[in-house]
Image (cartoon, rainbow, N blue to C red; front, side, top):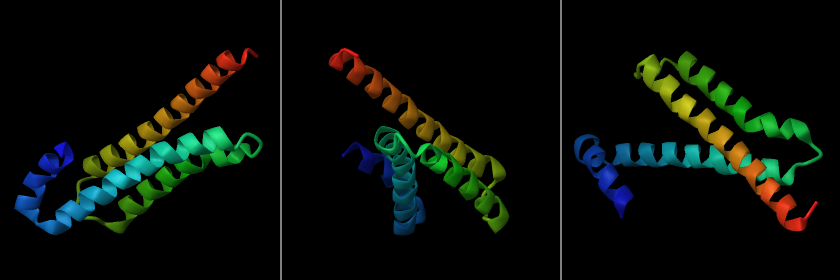
Amino acid sequence: MFHVFLALPALAVFGALAGIVLGLMGALLALAFFGQLLLCLLCKTVRWLLWLPALLGVVGLVLCLLAGLPLSVGVILLFWGVYEVLALCGWAVSRLLRGLWRLVRGV
């Protein structure tokens, strides 16, 4: 319910499309975190896949800057910076979970 209250001012000012855009942005940020977490936990032998979420973030940043969006460069950099930080947090949580698993297993 709390997320509805956060989106209500944007919905009141900009309409339903703003809610859809905010939802897509939140889903992309969640995908960065959980994608990095799952890749780090499941792909032990294919190490190059661990760089995939960060690489997709850089590609998204370049595409947004080249697309000529009606947003300031600071807003675009802020969003993709948060994306990369969340991908880094996913990596950190995966390292923490692996460490806990090794501790529990006794290796």
